[in-house]
Amino acid sequence: MSGSPPDPSRRRFFRQFAGEIAASAAQVVGAVAEVRDRSAAEAQAILGTVDSAMGGTGARTRATSGSRGTSVPASKAVPDPAAGTEAPTGFRTPFRFDADDVLFVIDQRELPDVLVEIPVRHAHDGARVIRDMAVRGAPAIGQVAALSLAIGGWLARNAPPRSRDAIIKAAAKSLAGARPTAVNLGWAVDRVMAAYQAAEAADATGVEIAAAMRAEADRIVFEANDDHGRLAEHGLHALPDTGPRELNVLTHCNTGPLACGQFGTALGVVQAAHHAERPIHVWVDETRPYLQGARLTAWELAQAGVRHTLIPDVAAGSLMAAGKVDAILVGADRVAANGDTANKVGTYPLAVLAARHGVPFYVCAPISSVDLQTPDGAAITIEERAAREVTEVRGRKIAPPGTAVWNPAFDVTPAELISGIVTEEGVLRAPFGPALAAAAAAREARRGPVPSPVDWGGPVVSAAAEPGRA
Ligand code: MRU
Image (cartoon, rainbow, N blue to C red; front, side, top):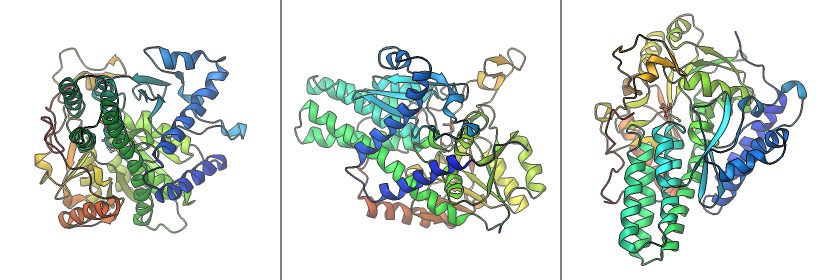
């Protein structure tokens, strides 16, 4: 069995991390800038440290003026336990603002080899990084879409009202249509569009409209971090009791900070358990064909100092049969009103195997991933991606030329196979229909109503983009 042993300096990092969850839970509005700046500072801590090791400010200069952002070997972002230093242990979000109108997004396609950032200077840059999966994971793409749309609002601030309206709506359409399955994308775009329309209706200036859009985008980012922190704490209490024995969790795809910003969902629960000093080991599905598990989850768990073992997806069944899995934790891209859940392809077979072997199967998803307008899983659009993602492994061909391919990016797990849905409002149990509606109402009571979808002429939360785009 592989995997790095827990390291005390990393544990300190997560103790501090979780302390910040509690601190941030007390503040909603007003802390947005602080969270954003802190995220930027963390990114700077990694990139800046390595930057100086690379010899001065060259990498920073590239980040602010080049078409590509900063690039450092990703292994440098993981501290050397032998060194026993308090070196930075990781990023806090998959994106950061370098200046008011440029968003830098970590290019997750390059991980774990190299930490590269891509600048988003226009809304269409944002749509491209989402569509091309430089940034991925349902909550993260919602946040990047919201911030990209706010950048679009800023760039349109001096345009006459009619052109500004056309520019902003076109940006919203391209962002909301970038990927079809994760509901967070349309949900976040709708929120920023609602802020735009409210400011416009109040006769605000172009600058004021841009500020209102940016404030809503910042709120989405802040709320996500806060909600994911709450979710992680709830999930901790759902984990099976294994006494003094190490808990063996199996996970699929990537649901950590890269996918969510700061904490993560399923991996947030893992990190909460690690922080609580509960002995935990994670079986990491490699997650063919995009390898989010091998490339991203293993990388994040190494940074967190959580013991883990990478497995081929197809090994999960025999592991369960051998009694080596205590619980399965996965994320979600869209939870339908009845609890049916779309998540990374390969999740459904895990749920079937879990039922066969009596292993609890938890979906960890914030309410922003719940779509009460979609009645059940059959109504969820499943993205189909390019054949080359299956016929090639990181650029190397593994199938005969011309081989026919079906490459769905997600599958649907029926609600009856789900033991519980872990949300920021608690762990929901079947029947999921009323439980999800009550949790959405509880979130609204806590935060105030989410600005409702407005008719801006493009996709709204449950009207997903065209399938089959890749
Ligand atoms: O295609 P991806 O990498 O965007 O798919 C991501 C997943 O399926 C995650 O499990 C899901 O978004 C939940 S992330 C908290």
